Length: 205
Figure 1 (cartoon, rainbow, N blue to C red):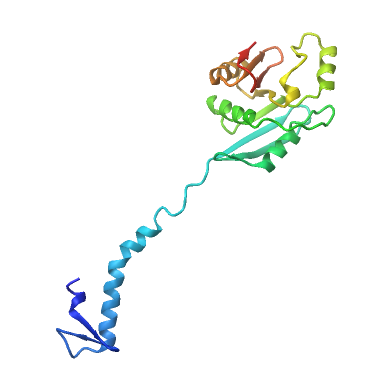
Figure 2 (cartoon, helix red, strand yellow):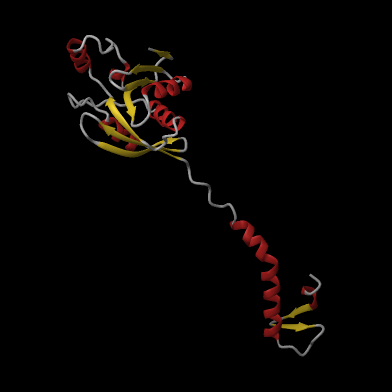
């Protein structure tokens, strides 16, 4: 600041007290450099942290054992679900027998994300055995197979359940991890090698 006070501006000229013979352009140049030096830290701090961190992406990858279709989708960013992705998931998990589509409870996708993460398989491909099931398909399975555990009022018909398997992970380990999450119903079908999870009341079989 003492150095700045050394300069006196008079009209269009800047005259140095210590060097009155200096030209005005030289004085203005020095003054500009001093101001730039003093303002540089403030300008630097103003730009720091101005960009917010990117929201965490929630990704799921599927393979449908009945249709052979695959899906790799980011369905949520931070706390916000992505409507287009949810619509894509609804269509993917349709009743493969009738083609009917129903809107899924997105909490089921959060459950799948947390389940695969708890098994150390975050981002791994999930084999889909059954997603949405119409009342017609549910009745068809009950009459065709009397010992498959197909209940009369399954949450599959409400698009709140899914039957899955994870390649290389035993069904018993999947069941235990799902039970530990305590987020809904868990059923283990060792003979068919899949696990049922849903977002209904907490129970297991």
